[in-house]
Image 1 (cartoon, rainbow, N blue to C red):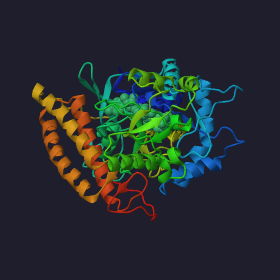
Image 2: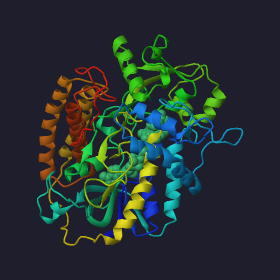
Image 3: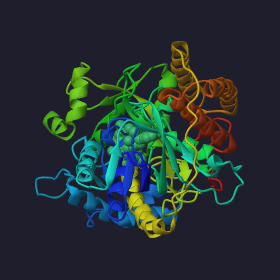
Image 4: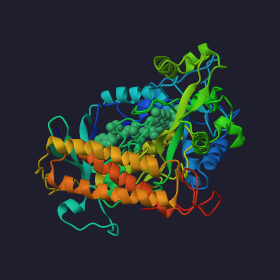
Length: 530
Ligand code: FAD
Ligand code: SIN
């Protein structure tokens, strides 16, 4: 294994792989990923990629307007416009690499509809769009000689001047990234991986909540790493809950019932079979996600129910099976025959709209460090992401970061003199158990106090409880050898802290940040930068 590359990419989801493919035409690339090569949020994406495709029905203007509307006044219009306009070209590129999207009887792409979209515009591969994209990208990566894809390699921390002995604070100018410390989880060796350019593409942080659609790897590592390196992070209060995860208590991750199912005609009902969404929004079950999730949460609390139902009984079962084979099978395995039974669903933590603050080229506030995908906050999503805009954003920003960084990297030297990781410390079995318990405690705090409905009192409680956990975990970190479990726990605590603090700083209800102490009304929109 080499110890230096032109480009270091942390993460092998859609963002990291797309970027790696592109920069590999120009220099050596190392992709590190903490699990198997395809384990990522990307792999589980169901609904699809939103892009303006059919200009007879759709337009850039409409997609921009829908995105801005969902974002509740906090999207950056320039970013929305560039993503919407550049998106179709990027999707065509993935198709050229081999991704297969479904077509209708006349051979045109079969465009799905999801919440908040005024027209059908979602390209998809059945209910396995993410899997298809991930498969395509990995196939391309395997053919590139100058990409080393290192699975089971966990990035612990970014290298900056701090590791050369300098004092780095949030006020330090020109903080510079030189690569990362990476733990090979098979050998337990920690490598100092130097790079001219580093891309953080570590995805989301759903595991900060008890009930989430995100796989176990989604622990917000990249955001925590950047924050520890004193980089800028913003809009962390906007955690999106997907309205319809299958109700199966204790399942981690929770299985998603795609919004495309509602786009296909499924209807939300309370347990007594009554529709309720018309009381919350004229778009009913296809309103933007923040509205639908809040409505479900309200109905559940009002009625003392643990779930609501998604009713597919009136839909054509044959067509349903064709469009949503994974969902059909999952329901069947759970004893739900969608032709006769309604599907019990609950909201689940799904997507982090904020994250590492970047500019329109994916540059972070740290030099030579880029971020894209779910870990980044580009300004596209504002206070609430429009469905299926995430895969699109990752494609567009991976390309923009590529264009920008290949121009810069020849002038960036590889940093010398970075010390190896100090691997001293011990770990006993009791401490491992404590880590598991503490992870659950963090999830409980976040789910109980910092969920869909918040209040100043709940946020204060959450912060007080988290502070105790933070102190205990830092003490453990100081005396033990580094493990993935401990690093993930630290990162989750860090992300939880950022969500709570950002939510406290936002003295209004907006988009996904609903605080009972501040009724909803339009105010001047400002990002929350930490
Ligand atoms: P990911 O795909 O999550 O990849 C992150 C990578 O980073 C992983 O390889 C991970 O192992 C690696 N990693 C993380 N930390 C470390 C570390 N410390 N060291 C090394 N590697 C690390 N969006 C849409 O637009 N349309 C959809 O239909 C859709 N459906 C979804 C369905 C589900 C169930 C889920 C969970 C999400 C869905 N989303 C959808 C959201 C979308 O899938 C994600 O936002 C997007 O795939 C994120 O891509 P990414 O490349 O940023 O991150
Ligand atoms: C879904 O299929 O409902 C998920 C779409 C998304 O998260 O954008």
